[in-house]
Length: 181
Ligand SMILES: [Zn+2]
Image (cartoon, rainbow, N blue to C red; front, side):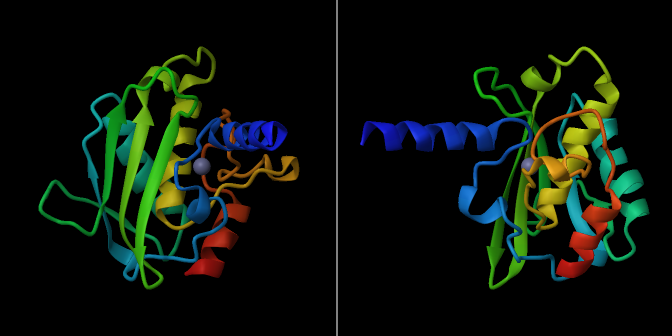
């Protein structure tokens, strides 16, 4: 009994390190859920620490690297079908970014990206690349992409641990998206 419990905890810890997420069942594999109108996915950027980087991530990285996906910034808090991006400070938790998505009948209706400022600010080298990495990786989750955890996949954006590169969507990430959309 004790041993199993310990193993489960280790697995959970392994999963939440880096740019992990809370929704274990849905997000670690591709959720299979997608946005009904990927050409106009609204996001609201309330991050103060990384405001410019978040907009870069959505508008200059994802929009330019993909054909069918187009993020559109909104400041309209009354829109419910959107991605909300905000800062948190959880120094006792291990993750740098976390995304929780909501889906109904195979379609995404809501996503929240939490940027854990206290942890992101602890990196001392390649800080801009790491910030882009966390932000762009979490936007990948909002599109329905899950984390990848095998070491052979450590050269893709959706690899589940924070690192400096790649900090942009790679061909592997785009192929997964094309399979979903
Ligand atoms: Zn992740």
